[in-house]
Length: 129
Image (cartoon, rainbow, N blue to C red; front, side, top):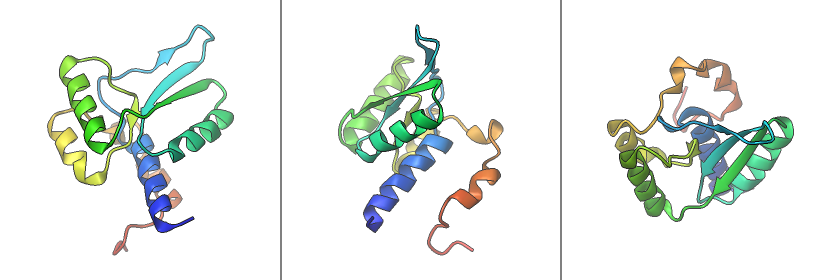
């Protein structure tokens, strides 16, 4: 696996764990399963979703590719302004996070999850201690 692929997967995982969108809500299907909507332009998310669903059989993950990064960010902004249609989780490049924090689109999960428990599951960033 090359570094670009690893970086994309790491970004996707971080996005999935740490930056779900505010104002969204997962739904419960008629089957009783929880459904999560994920937006990603990276095809590796499909593989990750299948693995996640296998480990969590009561959760269905619906992955949608809404376009390039620019198209995804536009769709996110439009859905946030409309007050509906936001995915539960989306892939966001770290450089774009301030844009969505400023608009109040992202949910701070540090109040819900203890991210320190996940620290050892990620490779340290370059230059990190």
